[in-house]
Length: 154
Ligand SMILES: Cc1cc2nc3c(=O)[nH]c(=O)nc-3n(C[C@H](O)[C@H](O)[C@H](O)COP(=O)(O)O)c2cc1C
Image (cartoon, rainbow, N blue to C red; front, side, top):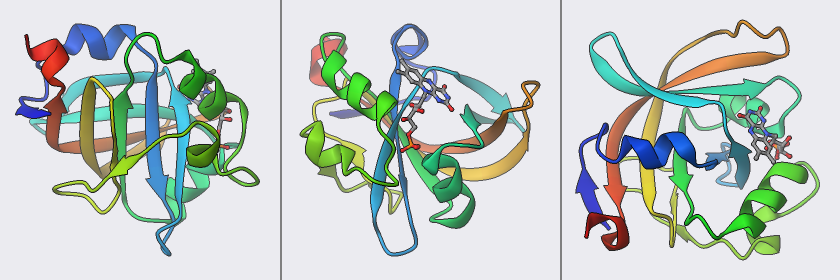
Protein backbone atom coordinates (compact mmCIF):
# COMPACT_ATOMS: atom_id res chain seq x y z
CA UNK A 1 0.00 0.00 0.00
CA UNK A 2 1.17 3.53 -0.74
CA UNK A 3 -0.13 6.75 0.77
CA UNK A 4 -2.24 8.85 -1.60
CA UNK A 5 -4.14 12.14 -1.53
CA UNK A 6 -7.79 11.82 -0.47
CA UNK A 7 -9.24 12.53 -3.91
CA UNK A 8 -6.88 10.21 -5.82
CA UNK A 9 -8.59 7.21 -7.48
CA UNK A 10 -12.00 8.61 -6.54
CA UNK A 11 -13.60 6.72 -9.43
CA UNK A 12 -12.84 3.42 -7.63
CA UNK A 13 -14.21 4.88 -4.39
CA UNK A 14 -17.44 5.95 -6.07
CA UNK A 15 -18.22 2.82 -8.02
CA UNK A 16 -17.50 0.19 -5.35
CA UNK A 17 -19.23 -0.80 -2.14
CA UNK A 18 -17.01 -0.12 0.86
CA UNK A 19 -16.33 -2.03 4.07
CA UNK A 20 -16.64 0.38 6.98
CA UNK A 21 -14.80 -0.63 10.17
CA UNK A 22 -15.79 0.72 13.58
CA UNK A 23 -14.68 -0.13 17.12
CA UNK A 24 -16.12 -0.07 20.62
CA UNK A 25 -14.26 1.45 23.58
CA UNK A 26 -12.82 -1.99 24.49
CA UNK A 27 -11.32 -2.52 21.04
CA UNK A 28 -14.03 -4.84 19.67
CA UNK A 29 -14.25 -4.41 15.91
CA UNK A 30 -17.15 -4.48 13.52
CA UNK A 31 -17.46 -4.19 9.75
CA UNK A 32 -20.45 -3.17 7.63
CA UNK A 33 -21.10 -2.83 3.89
CA UNK A 34 -21.45 0.84 2.93
CA UNK A 35 -22.69 2.15 -0.41
CA UNK A 36 -23.89 5.58 0.64
CA UNK A 37 -20.65 7.46 0.93
CA UNK A 38 -19.06 10.52 -0.64
CA UNK A 39 -15.71 12.28 -0.45
CA UNK A 40 -16.24 16.01 -0.18
CA UNK A 41 -14.77 19.10 1.43
CA UNK A 42 -16.21 20.09 4.80
CA UNK A 43 -14.73 23.14 6.57
CA UNK A 44 -12.05 23.16 3.83
CA UNK A 45 -10.84 19.66 4.60
CA UNK A 46 -11.56 16.40 2.80
CA UNK A 47 -14.02 14.15 4.62
CA UNK A 48 -15.85 10.93 3.95
CA UNK A 49 -19.55 11.44 4.57
CA UNK A 50 -21.11 8.09 5.43
CA UNK A 51 -24.86 7.54 5.62
CA UNK A 52 -25.60 4.97 8.31
CA UNK A 53 -29.03 3.74 9.43
CA UNK A 54 -29.96 4.19 13.09
CA UNK A 55 -30.74 0.48 13.30
CA UNK A 56 -27.15 -0.63 12.53
CA UNK A 57 -24.79 -1.83 15.23
CA UNK A 58 -22.26 0.31 13.37
CA UNK A 59 -24.34 3.38 14.22
CA UNK A 60 -24.14 2.49 17.91
CA UNK A 61 -20.35 2.03 17.70
CA UNK A 62 -19.85 5.32 15.85
CA UNK A 63 -21.88 7.13 18.52
CA UNK A 64 -20.59 5.36 21.64
CA UNK A 65 -17.29 3.75 20.67
CA UNK A 66 -14.04 5.14 19.31
CA UNK A 67 -14.60 8.44 17.49
CA UNK A 68 -13.09 7.10 14.26
CA UNK A 69 -13.78 4.74 11.38
CA UNK A 70 -11.97 3.36 8.39
CA UNK A 71 -13.41 2.91 4.92
CA UNK A 72 -11.94 0.14 2.80
CA UNK A 73 -12.67 -0.69 -0.82
CA UNK A 74 -12.23 -4.41 -1.50
CA UNK A 75 -11.13 -5.72 -4.89
CA UNK A 76 -14.05 -5.95 -7.31
CA UNK A 77 -14.18 -9.75 -7.11
CA UNK A 78 -14.60 -9.92 -3.31
CA UNK A 79 -18.39 -10.20 -3.15
CA UNK A 80 -18.23 -12.61 -0.23
CA UNK A 81 -16.98 -9.99 2.23
CA UNK A 82 -19.60 -7.46 1.08
CA UNK A 83 -22.38 -10.05 1.35
CA UNK A 84 -21.38 -11.03 4.88
CA UNK A 85 -20.68 -7.47 6.09
CA UNK A 86 -23.98 -6.31 4.57
CA UNK A 87 -26.30 -9.04 5.77
CA UNK A 88 -25.18 -10.02 9.29
CA UNK A 89 -25.03 -7.73 12.32
CA UNK A 90 -21.97 -7.38 14.50
CA UNK A 91 -24.33 -7.48 17.50
CA UNK A 92 -24.36 -11.26 17.27
CA UNK A 93 -21.79 -12.23 14.62
CA UNK A 94 -18.03 -11.86 14.33
CA UNK A 95 -18.03 -10.81 10.69
CA UNK A 96 -14.23 -10.56 10.59
CA UNK A 97 -14.03 -14.26 11.31
CA UNK A 98 -16.89 -15.24 9.03
CA UNK A 99 -15.57 -13.25 6.05
CA UNK A 100 -11.91 -14.06 6.85
CA UNK A 101 -11.03 -10.36 6.96
CA UNK A 102 -7.62 -9.37 8.30
CA UNK A 103 -7.11 -6.11 10.17
CA UNK A 104 -3.91 -4.08 9.78
CA UNK A 105 -3.07 -1.38 12.35
CA UNK A 106 -3.95 2.13 11.19
CA UNK A 107 -1.21 4.76 11.09
CA UNK A 108 -3.34 7.59 12.42
CA UNK A 109 -6.39 5.83 13.87
CA UNK A 110 -6.94 3.20 16.53
CA UNK A 111 -9.42 1.60 14.17
CA UNK A 112 -7.56 -0.70 11.76
CA UNK A 113 -7.71 -0.81 7.98
CA UNK A 114 -8.33 -4.04 6.05
CA UNK A 115 -5.72 -6.18 4.33
CA UNK A 116 -6.04 -6.82 0.59
CA UNK A 117 -8.22 -3.79 -0.12
CA UNK A 118 -7.49 -1.53 -3.09
CA UNK A 119 -8.21 1.72 -1.20
CA UNK A 120 -8.24 2.46 2.55
CA UNK A 121 -9.07 5.67 4.41
CA UNK A 122 -8.47 6.43 8.09
CA UNK A 123 -11.04 8.91 9.37
CA UNK A 124 -11.80 10.85 12.54
CA UNK A 125 -15.42 11.87 13.10
CA UNK A 126 -15.64 15.67 13.16
CA UNK A 127 -19.32 16.27 12.49
CA UNK A 128 -22.69 14.52 12.32
CA UNK A 129 -26.08 15.50 11.00
CA UNK A 130 -29.50 14.07 10.24
CA UNK A 131 -29.69 12.68 6.76
CA UNK A 132 -32.50 13.60 4.40
CA UNK A 133 -33.72 10.02 4.89
CA UNK A 134 -35.34 9.84 8.31
CA UNK A 135 -33.95 6.36 8.98
CA UNK A 136 -30.32 7.39 8.41
CA UNK A 137 -27.66 9.66 9.89
CA UNK A 138 -24.60 11.31 8.32
CA UNK A 139 -21.15 10.89 9.88
CA UNK A 140 -18.39 13.15 8.55
CA UNK A 141 -14.96 11.60 8.95
CA UNK A 142 -11.94 13.83 8.35
CA UNK A 143 -9.51 11.84 6.17
CA UNK A 144 -6.32 11.60 8.23
CA UNK A 145 -4.58 9.44 5.64
CA UNK A 146 -5.46 7.28 2.65
CA UNK A 147 -3.73 4.43 0.84
CA UNK A 148 -3.95 2.64 -2.49
CA UNK A 149 -2.77 -0.87 -3.28
CA UNK A 150 0.11 -1.40 -5.68
CA UNK A 151 -2.42 -3.08 -7.98
CA UNK A 152 -4.24 0.19 -8.77
CA UNK A 153 -1.12 2.40 -8.56
CA UNK A 154 0.25 0.70 -11.71
C1 LIG B 1 -24.17 -3.67 -0.94
C2 LIG B 1 -24.68 -3.14 0.37
C3 LIG B 1 -24.57 -1.77 0.66
C4 LIG B 1 -25.03 -1.26 1.88
N1 LIG B 1 -24.90 0.09 2.13
C5 LIG B 1 -25.36 0.60 3.32
C6 LIG B 1 -25.23 2.00 3.61
O1 LIG B 1 -24.69 2.79 2.84
N2 LIG B 1 -25.70 2.44 4.81
C7 LIG B 1 -26.30 1.61 5.73
O2 LIG B 1 -26.72 2.06 6.80
N3 LIG B 1 -26.45 0.28 5.46
C8 LIG B 1 -25.98 -0.24 4.31
N4 LIG B 1 -26.09 -1.57 4.03
C9 LIG B 1 -26.70 -2.46 5.04
C10 LIG B 1 -25.72 -2.84 6.16
O3 LIG B 1 -24.43 -3.15 5.66
C11 LIG B 1 -26.30 -4.07 6.91
O4 LIG B 1 -27.55 -3.74 7.47
C12 LIG B 1 -25.35 -4.64 7.95
O5 LIG B 1 -25.82 -5.92 8.30
C13 LIG B 1 -25.25 -3.75 9.19
O6 LIG B 1 -24.32 -4.35 10.07
P1 LIG B 1 -24.14 -3.94 11.59
O7 LIG B 1 -25.46 -4.13 12.28
O8 LIG B 1 -23.08 -4.89 12.07
O9 LIG B 1 -23.70 -2.51 11.61
C14 LIG B 1 -25.63 -2.12 2.83
C15 LIG B 1 -25.75 -3.49 2.55
C16 LIG B 1 -25.27 -4.01 1.34
C17 LIG B 1 -25.40 -5.49 1.05
